[in-house]
Image (cartoon, rainbow, N blue to C red):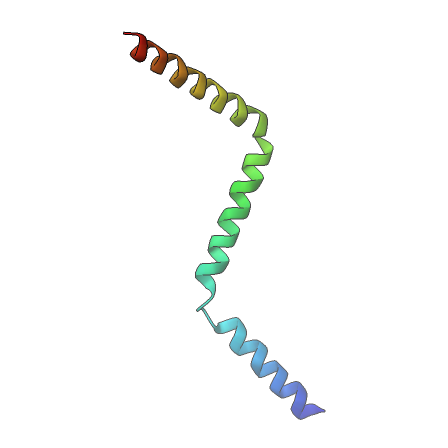
Length: 66
């Protein structure tokens, strides 16, 4: 039983010290933060995007009709 606990403890330590997956973890955390911010400011972002598309549409209509 003690040998099994020792092996488990060593595996947990090696997993904790292993830095190969840090890049993936950082990317996941960044994506989660961006999604949370997007959800918090959803209405403002939607309004901004609608205004931008409306402006692009008006400018393209002006360009085409010229």
